[in-house]
Length: 198
Image (tube, rainbow, N blue to C red; front, side):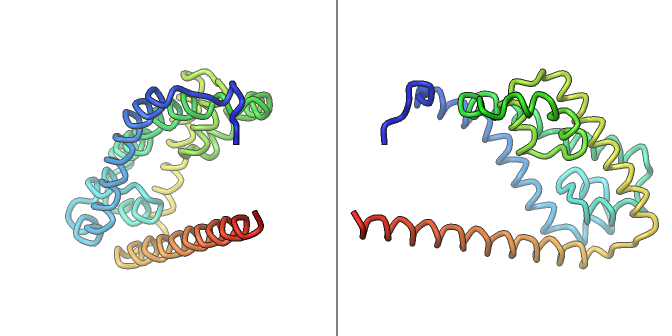
């Protein structure tokens, strides 16, 4: 299928840009996997390290009773926001040329969405839509801090044992893996059917 001129990117520029942005994201993902694997021990002896490695909601709530609010907020905000500039830049560099139809909508509602749900895909969409980096960063940090404050307070009332937090993460990973496998199988079956009809 022929691509339109607007869709063409320099393959070398795309791969170098994606690699330079993907490497830090890969390292943060690896840290999260290590933190998840060591969660019970880290929660018992080094809850701040658990937050720094794997800042998942279950782990944050489990660590909250063992960590002061100020430390919890600083470490949690730094770790959660660490990947966000890379997602934003990746969206701007890689997705921007394909985002023209949605640019106006994201320009209108992008900042509130970033504040309410500051995740990688949302920040990539903000970057692709061309939102101002400083405005996105402010909404991102404000939303992250608010979520952390709520999780810290919730963690004071709902005691989450480490084994339950790990079980929740494992179950979530299992569901995500099953969904990805199902999607892969669907795509392969669809490709085989298309080959059969052509």
